[in-house]
Image (tube, rainbow, N blue to C red):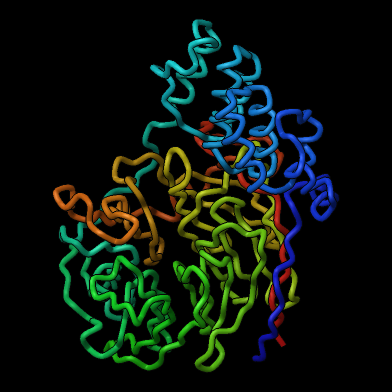
Length: 486
C-alpha cells in the first residue's frame, strides 16, 4: 500500500471568518488604536492570538465593554472553551448585565458545564433573584458524579510519572510507561509491576509518552522524547524524539524511527495502530500527524490553524483516522479518498474540546475529556458515514478519582485509563516540586457499553432523549483533507 502525503486543509470556524481569513481587515486592527474599536471592528478579527492580546489589554485598561465584545468574538471562534465563556459571563456580571449573564450561564449549563458559583463574589451585581438561584443550583448539579465506573487498581506511589497504559491481550497484562524513568513496566490487574523495558537495556528510550500494541504482529510501538522530565536527560540528547518499535512478547528493540529536530522540540503524545498494522502518531507541539514508512516518519496531516493535536483513533477498516484538537474539537481524515472533515455535531449540546484520549469502539468514539469541567468520559455514536455524531452518552463524569485523567486502553468492552498522572506536582523544568504529595496512581475502569440502549444526548440538532442535561459542545470548524491510499 503506497501512502501519499496530503496536508490537511482546514477552514475557519465560521463562513464569515473564512471570508476574512486572509484579508487586510483580519490583521489591520493590530496597527490601529484598539481603544477606539467598535463591536463590528472586533468581529472582523479572526486571529485568536490578536484577540488574546486585546483581552489582556482591555483587562488592564478596565474597559469592560470592549473586553466583553472581544471575549464574545473569541468564544465564537473557539466554542469549546469553557474558561473563555466563563470570563465573558464574569465581564457581563461586572457590568451589571443580568440578562446577558444569565443567558450565557444557562447555555453553559445545557452544554454540561459544571461550575460552583454559590459563593463567588465576582457575580455580586447579578445575584439575589430566583433565576440566579436556579442557575447556581443547575451548574452545581452538573458537578455531581455520574456513571458506574470505578478505580480498577492502583500503581505504586513513586517519582515515576506514569502517563501511558496499553494492553497485551495474549498475555493478559498491562504495559505502563514512565515519563520520569523512560521505563516500561508490566502490570497485572492488581497493579503489581514488573520491569519490562529500560533505557539501560540498550534501547535508548527517553521519557515514555504513549504506546500502541499491534498484537497480531507481536509489536509494541512507543513514542519517546528526551524531555526535561526524564531523569536520565543528557544535554547531547536535547530535542530528540521518535517512535521505538519492540517485539511485544520479549521487549526486544526492533527499530527506532527518529524524528527530525524541530524548533521548540516535539511532543509525541499520542499513537495508534490499525487492525491492518498501519501506525499513526501525533506531534502535539507542531500539530502534525505522521505515519511510518520503512524506518522513516512520513508527514500525513499538518495545518497551522490546529492548536494541539491529542487523541488519535482509527476505524476498524483502517480507512478513517479521527483526531482531537484540544481547543477546536474533533476531526476526521478519510485516508482512502484523501479528504478531511470536521465531525458534525450540535455545539449547543455537545462540547468536544479538552479531549486527551480517543478510542474507536463499534461505530462509536470514546473520549476522555480532561479539559472539560467537569472531567468526564463520553461515548459518541457516529453516523453511518462516520462524519457526524448522532448522540452522546456520558459514561463517567466528575468522579473524585479524575484529578487529571490522561491516556487509556480498551480491554474488550472496558476502558482502562490513568485517572491522575500527578503531572501537576512537577515544575516546568521537570523537577518534582511536591514530593510529599505523591500518591499511588489510580487506574480507572469505565464500561464502553454503559447504557448502550439509552437514547443519550442528541449529537445533532434533534431533541435530546431520556437523559438529564449533564453534558457538553465542540468546534464545528476545521474541515481537513487527508492522505490517500492507493
